[in-house]
Every structure is written in structure tokens, then in C-alpha cells.
Length: 405
Image (cartoon, rainbow, N blue to C red; front, side, top):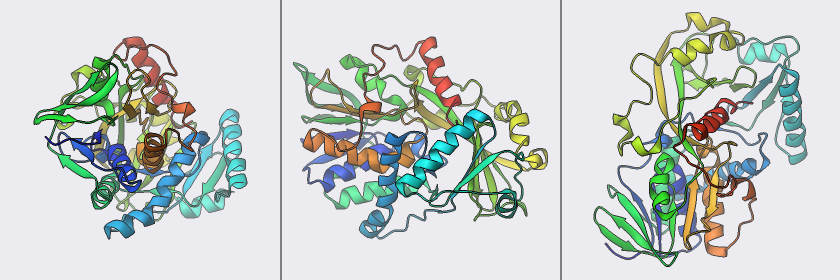
């Protein structure tokens, strides 16, 4: 295969965003390689929730870049992204979660993000199926919403091509080549591509590429899943998303129905070494067990959704997200190998932060530094780890369980 100046490995939402931002910055001969088709793993299985503000300021800066990109991508590609700006209702009932939500509310006001406390009458009008205790704190963030992750990934890829990058699917990267600690190319099932810079954006499979180079990425493939209830009179496409910290659950509209996601007490994790190339052939959830987590969470969920027992759940979606012990991404340069960069550990927030991640990595690669705060995402922050060990998998499972907090 022909030489490239830089190879991006992985055709998910992070890889496609990085390719676009690199090409936008004028990097010549950017080549993105995907072994199957674009957005066929985690990126196509996400709920697509988009938040402008959270308890993690460094993530918020990345996410806001994604919001800024919607009109830019639509203009470049000539295609609508159809972002659903329904807003989000955050709910807290325990004192600890109330304090956390109040901090988020105050920071939103300081930073100019629309946010307001709402009362029972507002909730009854906007979410007639929802209930909360009299002393619950409920805050509405108007500018948030959700998006189709598959469509957004495709938009990044198309914009990357139109900006000069080459995007090739159906080519598997077998390994990264280096000499004297410096990247020299990538080996594929169709030959070697010489290059001096590589970005690993292979999602849950990324450790298969970095560990042969002596770099263990501190992340574990972890199950994420949600259920979809059939349309009912109390549901509606214009209702806000709902995130309940104490219940460890979220909802959003879904074609007249309701999408419901819950955090488990112990999320299911996997050894990255056993993942197949085609995730569609892999049982993330054992047959017949798709309702176990919902049953486990029934008491928590029925507290805000009294109609849970009567709801007609017709669809179940399960996929993989790569989680780290602290729920933060893995972004930056691999110090042990010159020319190697990583964008991984999406922690279920990759869609939301994809624009900022692409911008930050492209800036780091071309300028040697980034205006974004990447310290919380440092690849080496946990020291030496064994990603396949049971102890490390437990740490990452716990991070998934805390996600709604």
C-alpha cells in the first residue's frame, strides 16, 4: 500500500473525528483504516446523549466543541444531522447528589449554559409518566439533547474525505511497526503502510495494538445497554431526556416510545483478548439474560417511573464501551513510542465529546500541545496496569456503575 504521513486506526466516531480535524488543519496524506465498515461497533450502539455540562469540566470543554460542529458538518456535507434539542432534566434526591447537582447548576450559570430549577407542575407537564419526591432537586438544561451516533460518525468521515483525508474500510491493521522507539508504519492484511505517526482509535480493541509495543492502556471493555418501550400516550418525541443520579438511570424519547438505560451494581466486563473482529458475532449479553439488569434495577426505576411494570419493552440494545477506573478518557501521546497517539477509553461519552477529542488530538499532533486540558486524560495516570486482570476489570466495572452520579 502507498505511504501515508499519518494513519488513524479505527473507523468509529473518534477515529473519524480525528481524521476530519487533521485534514482540516492541513495535514497531508491522512489515512484512516477500518477493518470492517464505519461505525459498526460501539459508535452505532450508543444512546447518543449530548450534555453541555457535567461534573467533569475537562469533558465539558470537549463536548461543547461537538455542539459547535453540527452546523459546520451540515454545511460541509450538505446533509442534516437532525440533533434533537429536547433538553435534559437532571434529578437528585440524596443530599450528596443534590450538592453535586447544585454545583453543576451554579457552574452552568457562571459559564452561560442555560439551566433552571423546575417544579412539580413543570415536570408533570413535560414528563407525565415521571414522579419524584417532594424534596427532590430537579434542574432543566435547555440546550442539551441527543443525536444519531451513526449519522454523526458518517458526517465526520464524509467531511474528512472532502477535506483531503483518505478513508478506507475493509482493511485490517495487524500491528504497528517501530524502530528504535519510533513509529515507522502499520502492517495491514493488504500490506505495509509506511508512516511516521499513528493514532490508535480502535475502541475496545486498542490494547491489541498497543500492548505488543509495551503500552498497556488502562481500560476494559464493559457492557453498556438500554431498553426501548413501545409508544404510549404519556411518552412523546419532544419530551426532555431524564438523568436520575440516585436511581443510576436515564431516559430519552425514541420514535414515540421511551429509551431506558440503567447502571448495574456490577457491570459485565470482558477480556479484550477474546473479542472477535466482528462484534455482531459476540454475545455481550447471554441469550435470555437481557432483562436481568432491568429486574435488578426495578425498585430504583419504579421510584421515578411507576408505570414500569405495565410498559411494553420491545427492544434491547447492548454493546461495548471501554471504561477506565476514573471514568475519564485516554487521550494523548504515548511517551514510550515516538509518533504514537491514542484516543480511547470512551467511558460511554465518546459521542458527546467526539468533536473536542478530534480537535484536541489534531492540535496536539500538529502543534505539539493542545489548548484543551488533557491532563485528566493522561495515558499513564494509573501507572503500570494489567487490563485483563480480574482486579482491574472490577475497578472499571465500578466506574461504569458510578456513571450517572
